[in-house]
Image 1 (tube, rainbow, N blue to C red):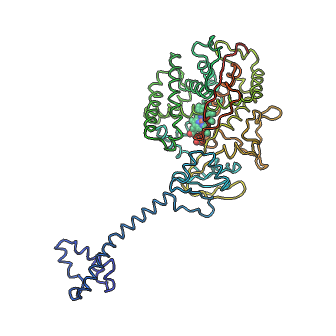
Image 2 (image 1 turned 120 degrees about the vertical axis):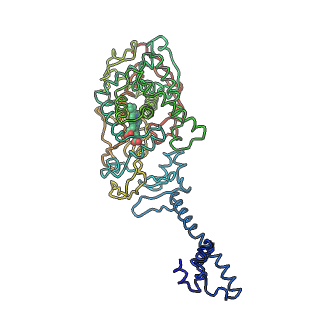
Image 3 (image 1 turned 180 degrees about the vertical axis):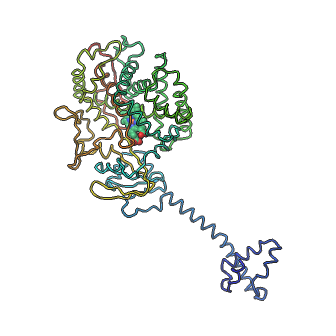
Length: 565
Ligand code: HEM
């Protein structure tokens, strides 16, 4: 400080450093001031009044400036940081994909994206081409729309694209579940063991019994089941698949009637959660809806609690295996309840809606329904289709149904619209199939939306919006797996189950369960749309990106158990 004063020359009297010296001087305690006063301005008293006034006034102005200087500096840094966070300062760097920040700071394109993701991405692709980065609620998403370039993203040989971290945050928010080390890998190994191969064969038997119980009721076939019943097709399919799936995976008590009632009630609550789900994920709920979501979460944690599960028989090996892992990791029972909720959601959120689309397409396309029925007669034989006390048939026949397989694949092509997300760890070069290279920025998210870029690509699937039940059949009746884009064979010609590290581990079980249901319905029941001319309803635009889509409204139909086949 002393040294600072000594080097001052007259011109510097107005400089901030001098002023600061004076301020500090006048704020010193008297004793300290007396020690310091030798260093006051030389000959200040000898200056003219005007000179002194000028010095004093300038000094105070400068003092204010000096005081505010650092504050303003900090403020400026804060504003710059904020603007940076808002994305206003982000610029496209060389080699990066086209950047579209949208017109609203921070939010970017979030509103149009959330309103109708499909239309939004169609528009962006038309504007920017196959790769582009958009800002959505402060986060940058790079969408890759060329399916021939999906390989490096899904294989991620350099381990630069992370799925787990993103998923962990999401499941904490939605289900309240705190991930533990290794649980993602464990879910996949549990599923390989119990939802595929021999494990699946056992589960299929349980599922067939559950479907029969749910559709016919605990007393089985009765005169009542042979009468016409009217319902919404979406409600009917979702309700049946949910109850049968829930009971098969989470187990029964000794009282089946009570189990059915409880499953019915759980479905009603599940649908409430399901309806709020898209806006919950996007944080768009109003205060009352937030409260409702909290209530539903607590209800599911309680209903699926491991304490309750102890009272049940026949919980699936899949759930038991996963809960045992969590117990061994020391996960608290309350957290295991949340895990159960997550698994209920994953296992029941898509099978009902997919089965709805499948049955609706069959009802709208009598030639397809006829083909499925003929195939069933062929593989099961007339006798195998007779509805006895319960609904039944030889499950192994499901391995010999290429027509039904094609119907399901076509249904999933038209109905399943998941988004695949990966967080970029460290700047990373993405090599496209055409040789072009793009720089992906650390912290951004790489996103694939195969519904638009694959399922609806007319090059891969001519007349992509049409339901063609034999699209996945070769002329000789075998499964068709050769599809092309721009003359090149394409590996990912449909992606209803996602792909890579996050591929659905329940896909084989899902397919078996839906096939069982569709087979039972078309072979054992008469089915009719109340209005045969009713068009296929449009997709509820809020559901794009969340697995299987849902219709914007239900379709009335009626059904009755066939007296004889
Ligand atoms: C039509 C029915 C189904 C469809 C379309 C479907 C689709 C999907 C998709 C696309 C994902 C990956 C999401 C992502 O990449 O973030 C996924 C994940 C998952 N699915 Fe399915 N799924 C179905 C049925 C099932 C069933 C029946 C089960 C279990 C019995 C199941 C269990 C799971 C689980 C546990 C995950 C999370 C996997 C992980 O964290 O890596 N799914 N499903």
